[in-house]
Image (cartoon, rainbow, N blue to C red; front, top):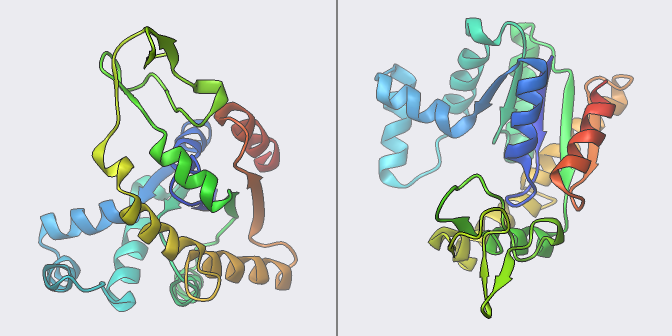
Amino acid sequence: MNILIFGPNGSGKGTQGAIVQKKYTVTHIESGVIFRENIKGGTELGKKAKEYIDRGDLVPDDITIPMILDRLQKDDCKKGWLLDGFPRNDEQAKALDSALKKAGIKLDYVIEIILDREIAKNRIMGRRLCANDNNHPNNIFIDAIKPAEKDGGIVCRVCGGALSARSDDQDEVAINKRHDIYYDKNKGTIAAVEYFKKLSKENNGVPKVIELDGKPGVKEVSEELMKKLG
């Protein structure tokens, strides 16, 4: 089972990807990790990528695509993979589709978690970390996991521990920049999603596109996803 997963920052994409990985024992691959592994390993592609990154430039697709394709052909991907974080635009979608076809690799599913931009931003900015356990979910904007109130303040809903916010979760400029890329229907990630939807229609539902409403809680979204994955 080979899968692409899409969703804006704040949609719970990483959480749902981890659930899919565990249930179907596929390899969860993040594009950022591929870059770091190639650069750290000193591969030819890694060296080329580093030159662009050091200059603050985007790494061209003719370097990125071969890196990703190489990763998808490793032994741990033979039972399937879930690719997260790529493609980010329609040109990358076309290039990835072409590369997969040339390599004889079938794309089975495209998962899209749909979430309103303002809700996605609020979810990021509403995250609170528990001093006792970072795995205790708390978010001031999600009713199901709202922190508890105590002495006029808020504490962890699970254990009553002190809560804090990550500085990057409060960086509205950075959040908006990432969302500008994702929600751009012409040149952004949404355009990449639309490319695969069009491809699916032209190929009798291959790859199968799964659209998920990201507004409900993690449990509800994952139940809907498992139902559609079958």
